[in-house]
Image (tube, rainbow, N blue to C red; front, side):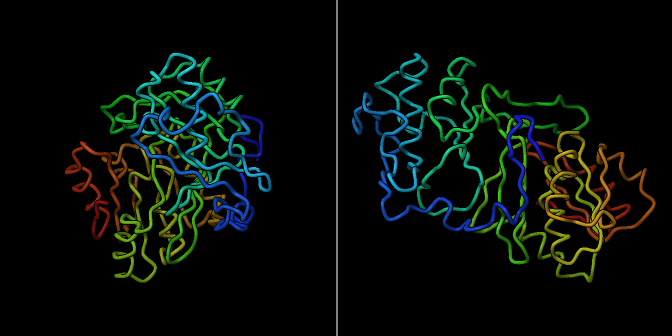
Length: 313
């Protein structure tokens, strides 16, 4: 399937999982460079030396994340976005690798494996970054404090803005039952990081263990992560719902990528308080994964009308 950027950004799990454990690991010839995150970059590197070939491995052609971000910083300094005296790795916004994996060491990056979210950036500079820093797949302008999506029916939709390149990413979640692939357009959906101890998934598994083949409502499904995990575990059916249209569109895509049979799920685009009036069937588990600051009392009360129990993750 072609991405909106006309490239092959979408791949089946088998295609991206091949040798995935070594995807970011250095080869024997890699030049592993880790820099101090808070120290101004000019104290650690000669900025004039930074270009697309700086510290690139002669064998595998990859560079460490710190060097890639240093190259971005040089551009931000040259374009007047950052002051050289203050520019450090902590001033480069949010770097998101793709495929997204839980990593314990600095990754070595190949081309088109990094999406950057920067608060102070314009389209012209974003184009320069994508053009000159080959590891960068896309540049997004956004405030990291802003919650992306739609909180509830009384809230406006909040989205970041893609300035250059492509911001489609994939996260690979290693769980106890299966590996799960979650695609998302990062300017449209909230950020999640694959973690070693996946707290939300562990919560869902704990309640799944109480049932044989439970029926689940994933009431605020986002890109579908928790409901897909339920179906990969022991759930017999999952109703996915989200008030944010882009979320349910993403969920539908991720269900297909993860090869979930169509008779195992349904998808709704409703306010969770209204959903209960549209459902005749009873469910075992209701899952509420609300954004911070959202009052969930009414959601819980309404879900309990059609679910045996409700959990908040």
